[in-house]
Length: 160
Image (tube, rainbow, N blue to C red):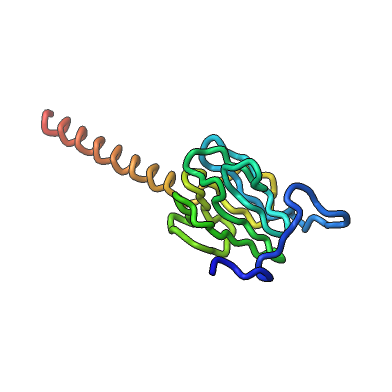
């Protein structure tokens, strides 16, 4: 079973219903990390949102690795989760392939190659990768640079 009907509330996909209040600090949001979604904000208002490449989804991601009907994003009383819909390239949270996962502030969420960072509240700031793959590559680059400099220093000392 993919889901239980009552456990996945429906909601208005594109705008607040009459009288709905925005929580202090704003709604939860996914902020784009990968191009062409860099810094794009996907607001997670209460209810269920469909995500995919097909135009009839609530959130349309025009990226070849995203399935036509890829996943659901569910905001159930402030608890947000992602549910994969048997997509071809999978739904990933923090580099782990998931069927369903509750999202925590700072989690990296990926639909195929479309990568986002989850923020509990939208404060309008830019996304920061906070320890993801980019950070690891930066440290690897620094380590390689240090090793090269050490090798050059050793060669220069031996020549002197």
